[in-house]
Image (cartoon, rainbow over all chains, first blue to last red; front, side, top):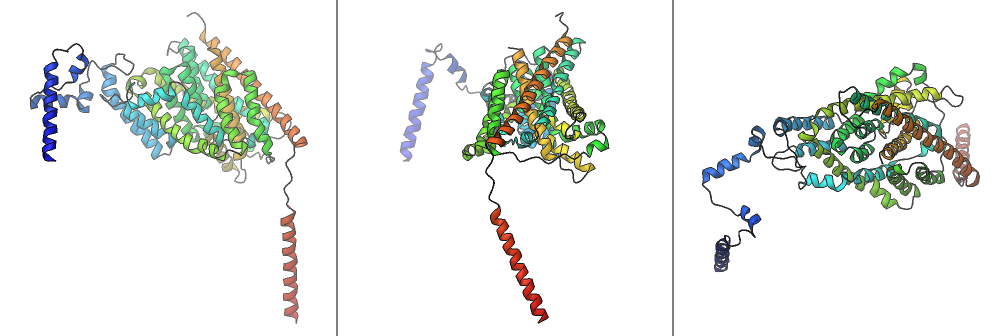
Length: 439
Length: 76
C-alpha cells in the first residue's frame, strides 16, 4: 500500500515537471492558465500578500482597481467607510427585526443579504457571487414577487369583502397614497432638489400601496437601479404600520365615529368564493391586461384554495413555496444594500417619499370612510379605512386594535379585512396602470 | 425638458385613481349581482340541524325525569 502511494506521488511529480517543461512552448494557448500557475515566493512576501487580502486591509486601503458588480467605477468612500456604515445599518435592521419584532420574516433575510453584500473582495453580490445569482434568478426578471403573490392569494380569504362589497371603495381610496407621492416625487424634481425620471417617480410612489411584492415588481420593471432603496423602504414601513397609522387615524376621526358598530357580516357561500377570483381576473383581462401578471398569480393561489380539491397544492403555496421564495427574495433584495448602490442621495428622498406615501394612503382611506357615511345605508367605522393600504393582515389588525381602545366590545378585524384585501387588488390595478403608461 | 412634470404627475393621478375606482366599482356591482344570483339559484343546502335539536330535547326530558324522581324521593 505504502509503496503504491509513493509511486503515485512520484508519477504526479513527474507529470508536473513535464507540464512545466512544456509551458513556455504553449504559452499563448495556455495564457489564461499560466496566470494561475503557482510561483514559489519567499515566506515574508507570502505574509504581506496575505495581509493585503484581509478585510482589514480592504477597508482601510481599498483597491483602486476594484469595480462594482456592474463593472463601473466605485468611489473610495463606497469601498471603505460606506461598507462599514452599511454593515452597521444591517446590524440596526437585525435589532429591529429581533428585538422589536418588525416583520422579521423579511427583514432578517434582507439585512443578512445586505451584510454579505458589503463584504469586500469576496464579491458575493457580483454576477458570480451567490447573492448575484439569486438576484438574477428571480428578481431581475420579476419572478419572485409573482410567486409570493401566489402564496398570498392562497392565504387570502375574500369572505369579508364579499359579504360587504362596498368596503372595496376604501381599498381604492388608499391608492391615493401612490399617486399623491408620484406628484410629490416629480415636484421634487421640478424644484431641482432631486433628479427623478417619471419612471423612477412611479416606482417610488408604489411604496404607498404598502405592498412589498408589488413594489418590487414595479421597481424591477421601471427603475431597477432604485430597487434596493424601494424594497427596503417598502418593507420597513410595512413593518412600522402599527406605529405610523394610529396617530393619523385618531387625528382624522371623532370619538363617536371610532365607536361606530358595524352590522355583522353575512355568511358567504362557497360558490361565491369560488366564482370571485375568476370574476376579478376576467375584469382585469377586459379592463387592464397590464395588471394580469400580478392579479392572475394572486387569483391562481386563491382559486386553488377555494376549489377545495387540491389541498396539497394549496398547502405548498401557503407554506413551503412562499417560505422558500421569501428567503431568496430577502437575500436578493439585500444584495442591493451594497454601499455603492444604497448610500446615494436618492435613497434619502425615497425613504422620505415612502413615509409620505404611506401616511397619505392611510389618511385617504379614513377620509373615504367618512365620505361614505354621508350617504344613506349602513354606517362604516372610519377606522377600517386605514386598512385600505394593502399590508395584509397587519393594517386590519391595527384597525381592530385602535377600535378596541375605545370600545372593548367592538370587533373590527373581519370588517377591516374587506378593505385590506381590496387594497391588494387596488394596488395591483394601480401598478398595472403605471406599467401600461410606460409601455 | 420643458414639460411641466407636476402637471404630468397630476395626469397620472387622474388616470390612475380613475382606473382604480372604475375597476373597484364594477367589481362591487359584479359582486352584488353574483351574490343575488347565487343565493337565488344555487342556495347552499341547509345543514341538517334537527338531529342535535332532538338530542337537546331528549336531554331536557331526561333532566325533567331525574328532577321529578328526586323531588318524589325527597317527598317520600
